[in-house]
Every structure is written in structure tokens, then in C-alpha cells.
Length: 111
Length: 116
Image (cartoon, rainbow over all chains, first blue to last red; front, side):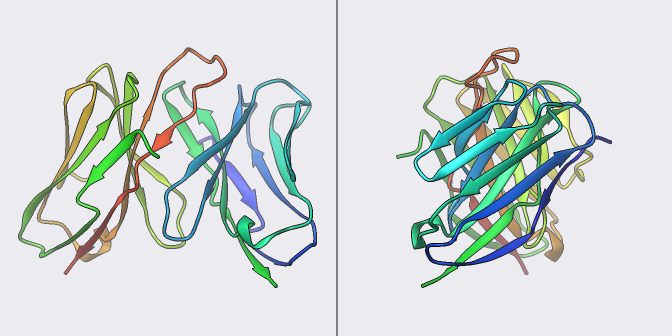
């Protein structure tokens, strides 16, 4: 069945460096959502992308939706300790009710 | 901070116990979800309720029994669980807008369940 795959699973980043996490779907998605879960916390919605090729920015975070609407990326510049956590992408599968979540990228930051 | 609350936050139970998890959303949403989050596994969708009607049962064992008495409340009744059921159980709510932007899910803080 349709699944949303996410890489890398772990990302160890030096404070101040940039990194990117990638999300891929086997089929076209109507939209892609990104969530962040801090250690010991619960997923919190970050953003939703709907249009082909869409790019949205939130301060140091840049989200992109691929032209074919099958992949997405999250790029963080100048990583800070507040960026620690797990970032999930999610896309609707089968019907509008269900979201398929990627396995997440867990980010740790070296000061 | 969050419009979705869950109780209890932590639960330890034996395999023969019966317990219930409660979720309440204060956002006026029309859909509610139960997810299971285990260590090193993706979020697993368990159940979906839309307008108090169950629209999805994702092949969940019968030892998990959901109940949605109204659009604001969702329960997960547990009985004869197994140790492998130990996980974080997350409730979420959402306003279904037929594909329009803004249909994100709002998660509760979760119930950390340990089955002995």
C-alpha cells in the first residue's frame, strides 16, 4: 500500500550547521504535512504544503513540495539546540481521513 | 497550550486488568483519532471517528475497544493487554475540510502505557 518514507532516521548536527530531511511517497499526494515532536512531547503541526513545487519558510526552516507531489524536504539552517526533536512528514493515504506518517528524522545537536 | 487533553498521562497495568484512556478536544473538530507510538516505530493509526461514527479500524486487535460518545470525547478501552502493547497512545483531532488547507491534526499529550 501507499506509504510515506523518510530519511535519514537520525541526524547528528553540529550547532550552527545546516541539514535536510527528505520525505518520499510511492504515489502522488494531495498535500504533505510536517510535524515536530520534542523529546517527551507529542507531535506538533508545523506546516502544510498543497501546491506542486511549493516552498514555504518559517524562520530558519524551509519546506519544499516536489513538482510531482511525491516528495518533500525540510531544510534547517544554522541549527540551534531548540531544533532538537523528531521531525515527521505525513501525507493522506487511501482517503482524506487517514494520514500516513513517515518514520521521522530524530535530530540531535552538538554544542 | 493544547486543545486536546488526555488522561491519564501515565498508566501501568497488568495483563488481566481493564482500563480506559480518555481524550477530550476543545477545538470543535469533527474527527478524532487514536494512534500508537512505539519506540523506533512510525506512528500507527488505530482508529478514526468522523462525526462520532467509526470510519477506520486499522486491523487493531479486539483487546482495544474505542468509544466515541460525542464529537468532543473519545475513549480507548483496554482489556487483557500484552506487554508488547506498551507504548505512547496519542489522541488527535481534526476538522475535515475535504482537502482544503488547514486540515492539520492536533495531538494530545499522550498516555504512556506500560503493561506488566
